[in-house]
Image (cartoon, rainbow over all chains, first blue to last red; front, side, top):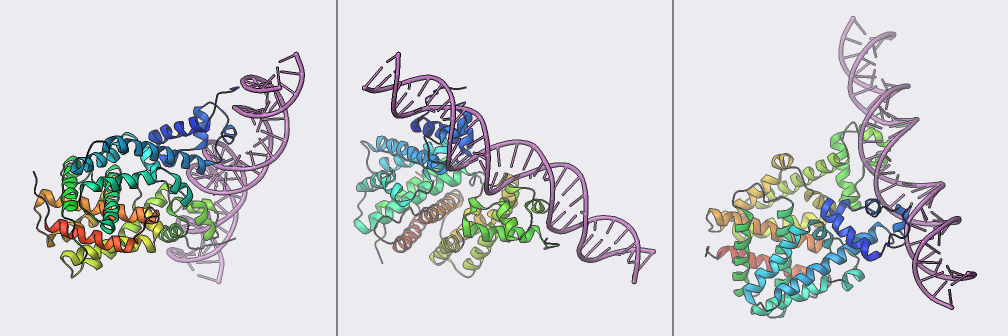
Length: 191
Length: 191
DNA sequence: TGCCCGAGCCTAAAGACTTTAGGCAAAAGA
DNA sequence: TCTTTTGCCTAAAGTCTTTAGGCTCGGGCA
């Protein structure tokens, strides 16, 4: 029927990512993927352990892509410039690839997470903070705060959570980044 | 087999919420619910339109509970006190009821969302800001920032995203709240 | 008290997705 | 060319969702 279509874990993962962007990460299904390759469902199970495995791979792909973009954006920038650039990487990625962005939030088991590009993200955020004057304990706090704001804002915005109130989210986004920059420059000392 | 068990949309919703806390919101299934009531699956469909409807109801329940807690916490507090109280409501709720918290993030269609307790949340956050000196456009920006931080922090923490780095999240949480308080007190003016 | 009717739960059934086991044929290597 | 590997297939069982239609329990009516 479809002799040697050339299935690959790679290709399946990529196709899965595209599928996620089209129908949502939650709706990514082994069956639908098989359909797209015009192949029987069971055939996919030689390349992917199971549905969870597939999703994990998509998540890892998304994390990589995101980290790559972040690295690009950060190159040659510092201070607020870098802050804004990094923030926009997340936001733009989420808009361009909602399914992949959702995938990047997929909960990975500890070992997988440790081997993922997730660590690059943390490192980059920390690098960004070199433009501000924070010593170690506070640096970690700041990394976590930035991560929270980026992820929180983007996911609420994507979910339509801001769509009912008045000022457009573009304005808010830039004011929030201004505020974060100001905050990092005058980070309050421990009590 | 089980004549008149006394199914109700109410009871199903509540049981669904408990189920969510036990197995995760995504894993809430009409079948499992039927099993718990020792009733055939089809019987639930007289009380709940479908799986999506069930999840929507659980989401609405969670939003209500959360709003009630927030209202309690905010009563008689102002300024940083109120900020910390509200923040902890979200965080504690997420810890006590992870499934319900996830449910509260369930994407509702616009009309449902407009009629949900979600609006109370926005109002309360705005009320909280009365303790700080922000005029209208900035108030909305601040509401959105707070929402982002609370949701972002809590969801990353729950997802284990902070669990690999050193300082404990308790410390970070309180430092983040300090920082937010400081930020709100000295909110940077528009450029 | 007895009857009746509707609400409440059931059986049946079809459709979709997941996952495993085992088979056949095409591609790759000797 | 022959053989081995590998890739996709058939078959099958299990789970969940959802709809259609039936039986009966329980409360209201006479």
